[in-house]
Length: 267
Ligand code: OAD
Image (cartoon, rainbow, N blue to C red):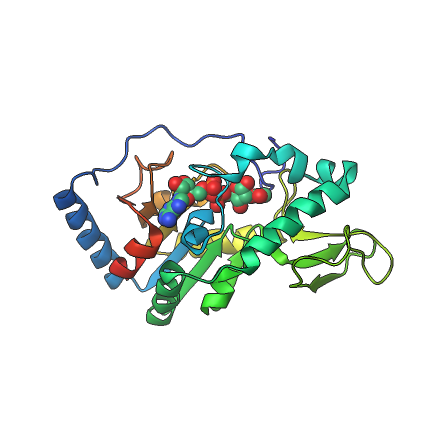
């Protein structure tokens, strides 16, 4: 799934090898949490990068890790433009099922904590790889949705773009009013991100004193590249995840545990 365009979705690269920051053992964990809380409290400019893990406690399956969707499904069959060209109905059946699952989900305490953080900080940017709309539902303001939005559709003929929250959809595959085939409003592997969005995300990351990285396996680029970018720019990076990621060794603090429990303690 490597793609020559730097800003298109790609999992082929790997992050740096690294050992997780010392958060094992209850005492060290508490100290790390205290330190991270202080960094966050003192920062006036904060950027947050979220991934599927923040919605896991809302009942939305992640892609990797325990119970991850990519264990049972292949991304190249369901999340590429080639897969859609080959079999639009199959791709839509999968998205229709995901829409039905997500429709039942409600934001959790992790989403809510990020809304509070946004209110506290003069400069705040929420960058998400999630397409589930739970940050919107929680009340977050401006959200940079790097991978699009599952609740939007786009016409493959006329290019128009519209919201659609029906789940299940009455007819598959759905069509546009112009008669053209509609596709999910998400970014697939090998496709470019929405225009200008990665630049905005990089800008916010470079300006941030703290980058908070929540519930992402940090394996998909260009989003994962924001982590080393923040480090190079001198920001503190705090990671919240159930398990280590390829960047655990370079972040300033890796807090291991569920986002719905850790974020309310951090914020
Ligand atoms: P992944 O599914 O790759 O990673 C989810 C991460 O969340 C894992 O590292 C888990 O350990 C962690 N996690 C699970 N439950 C958690 C919890 N309760 N609290 C904290 N962390 C938890 O999701 P992403 O990194 O978002 O793209 O994946 C990036 C992209 O790859 C997605 O946007 C999607 C996928 O393929 C497309 O479909 C195009």
